[in-house]
Image 1 (cartoon, rainbow, N blue to C red):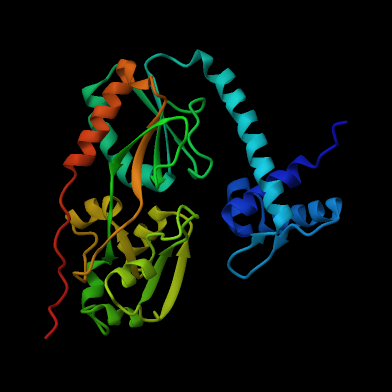
Image 2: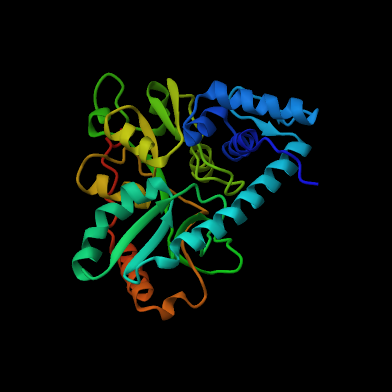
Length: 313
């Protein structure tokens, strides 16, 4: 017998578990945080068991909640694959669909795509952004650009580029009442943080950067958290604080002077950007052209400018 399931509540619950916050789930679903909370509460009452341990910054699933969230994600994923496959059967042969994180698409990929369009005017690029947590699906896109450790079973995975980590800020923050001359000066500024999804136990965080450089991370004047990397970088460009820059995502802003590196200390992230595609995908000329182009772009991106902060006396 098939139960009359509360599908809206199930979807809301899975989004909360995936994002670890009710606010991020609400943003994805386009509803209020209160509505998401009510859906999860109603689901718990319907099942007669608690599903979430609610926290001020993160909410974690119980053991039963984790089981249910995995089942929902797997079920919705299979349904999505079938629907996308049916919908895309008539996709034009001259269209290439790329799946990637929204921050990477906005900051790195979009500014470079004009070159591909000019070189291959007969081809059309379509960008599908997602969180990247559900893995790449060949039914939804021709090529995936994923960020993490390169785990995507069943597909060809090749490294696109790695990243160095280092603080960045607007040029105006180098001087003023509390100039940024050494890492301890972060104590007088706002620390901008990217709320990383659980790609690894060693995310490219402020703490990781400090540990790799043998530094004690000072307590900042305040902290602002963002759910997307492009929001972190934009806040830094506007002078909203000091962000931990990730090489590929800040190199263009460093080169044109919108951002600067106040300190010399860097750390090599354990995560990379990866190209993901079906084993036989490069047999298609359009896929091969895109892979060759984006690999060349990654290799030819500008070198990181040196730090410009004041030397320590």
